[in-house]
Amino acid sequence: MPDQPIRPTTPWPWIPPGLEALARIQLSTNFQRGEMSCRCGCVFGLQQEDVNPLLVVALQALHDRIGKLIEIVSGCRCADYNRLKKGARLSQHVLGKAADIKVPGMTARELYREASARMVLSPTGHGVFSGFGVSDEDQFVHVDVRRGLDFMVVERWCYTDGKEAPWRDDSYAA
Ligand SMILES: [Zn+2]
Ligand SMILES: [Zn+2]
Image 1 (tube, rainbow, N blue to C red):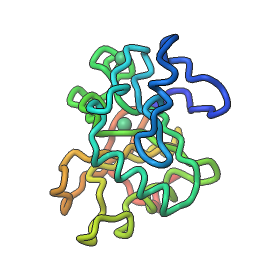
Image 2 (image 1 turned 120 degrees about the vertical axis):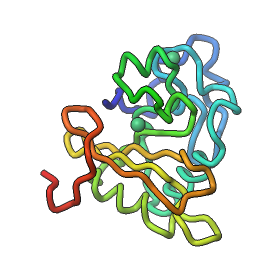
Image 3 (image 1 turned 180 degrees about the vertical axis):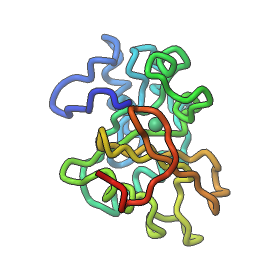
């Protein structure tokens, strides 16, 4: 389930007072720590080590590929918040290895195709994300780096009524 999208011109409401400067530290060229931190306000995700570095590399590569602002709908989640959002019990969000993303002007299927393309890439010629969840209902894409550098095999699923459901090809998309 998506959270509120980021509005870059307003303060991030989930960042506790006094921590805004920390939240504005760049994770990479186009991403800041605050975007990835847990929306419950618990500050999980604000420390550099909370976010898996491969996830940051992959998100930046995707940004560079499409050349558009990527909204992080949900990044790191503490266990309590993950439960509240009815996330998978072994959610990659809890491990700091996942983000749910949107790009204005792109459908979830279009964004998925870019995120899973072989050019979003590592020098070895493979994609970097190893988990993909596509929501046609809410138009977001879950991406994660669950397999680390062993990303020859990827997992894919869709969401139905906000829950993980079997992968469906484009042709079945609404
Ligand atoms: Zn939290
Ligand atoms: Zn997700």
